[in-house]
Picture 1 (tube, one colour):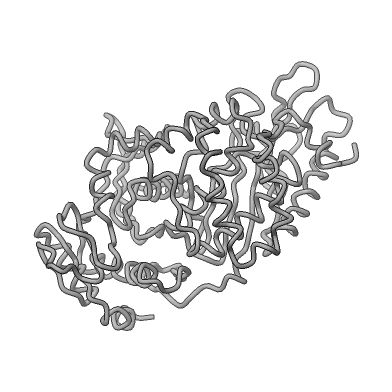
Picture 2 (cartoon, one colour):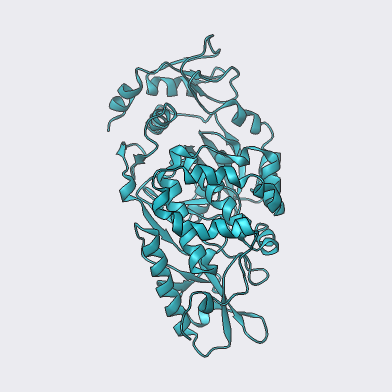
Length: 455
């Protein structure tokens, strides 16, 4: 759909770009075909787009870049320290990259340097997370990218410098966001070219995939047995870049049950490879020290939005937090498993990386995947955000399960009231039962036993 046609769709909206006298903001307003101003009128407009640190009230119906995000970004160092996101410039960082983001979608990258595909993916994930954690809807994130080591966020702004062309790209991505905030469709497809936004993605088209990790532990010594002794790096059963951790990579499915069955079949194949070897197959959060592992979940057929990420953090990550082994999970979150950990994998595809490896049992695997698909399908009906409270963030990283046990009932009630929940209620119930009973999964359980794989 052309930008003109998209603009025509929001022409009936009373929309204002509020800004502190910025040329870029005027360019964005021109691209959107709406007015702009330095002051917010009283009464406020139906929709308000806050560009930078513009003061004023919120829109009467919706705001893009709410005041809370501006306030959070007044002290970015404190915000990102709380969330364990590397922030701040360091000497010798070398390469730099600026990433422009609107509602979970990268619309442009700017750099005079070259980067590998993996480096770009990592940087895009960090940029998305930086804006998401602040509660912003759009902005630009600058990163320093060393040749070795972890990229660092150096600047986050909700007042990006916009050429007319870049302003048009922002407008194309902001218009679907406006429609969603006004109560329209949650699912707008952003095509491979971020300059083209098309119609709605069908829930039936949502694909579910995963690459959960597990490890081999020597039965007698208790030491790590590297996965590359048994598997190649690539393939449906492989190992990660460090060669130590094994991964299951089933083909994507539309149904959680089908994906769970495919995972079980691949685990049986992995078990056959180590038959008669003195090893145990373990999953969870951190079955061996210094080796945190994850249960990455892939979604295809719909674009990532910040509300989708927020819903996964609240309605999936928190229930899993309550059943994972607490001490191991705390150690894991020193390295991985942060709130809002996500990577874009291509047009309409993304990977949610926050959970620990839920391979611990077929029941938990099925519950996790069923819940994940339900959440992304019904995200418009899942508005709760416990992590808007600093106390909740601190409790999460401290492993304070009691804090969330007192609050999980509201999340569960929201989920159980969803259309379609009844169809998967039985598949999800083992997770609720563990939460009700205060039980944790067993990181030491051999996967061959819990998955009933013949050895």
